[in-house]
Length: 245
Picture 1 (tube, one colour):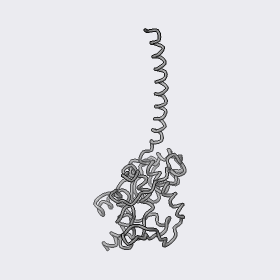
Picture 2: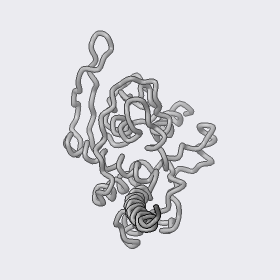
Picture 3: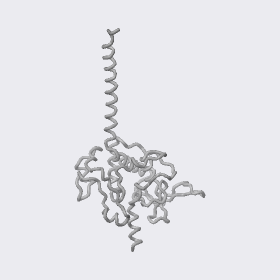
Picture 4: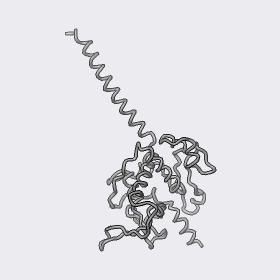
């Protein structure tokens, strides 16, 4: 019974994204830029709530902040909230944290700033997450039945396998990855799945710093203002000193 319970808990994927770290040299793919694409960020938010929030919280993000990506309060209530939550609440995992602590010795990791914390020498945290979410494969030697090229021996199962389908990784005699073998199709084509993961990663990236777009826009205006002020100051200085020998 304990073995069955442990396998079930492992399938919840409590250790996956936030424990995925460097040290692995599998090349990262460049994540498409979804910042500023409201439709993509909204789709990413939907994927996050439906697939990630079951186990991982985003304790520093409130649902009503999603209005910044074009969602109305009513749309948030109708499509992204669970029955007991309010639009002003933070994004809390559905799993009971007390049970998680008893089972694993700690609560599931928070994903609020996961995209900012996973940057490495190969690229940004978004690049890592984009690669990670697209390189799961079937591995019957693992307790969850899944493994990952970007994070070998990952404890997290492929929570989006229904979208991508079942795949097997083909390796050469030296253990290097060669290609994919599709076992069963998913609900999405390969192109559609990659686009969905780009949306999800884009949302995770936005969630790590929701004010990033505003900050950059404000920074441009500040620089333009300083340049204009510098020109005015220069002309005033010329006018002041023109009659002084």
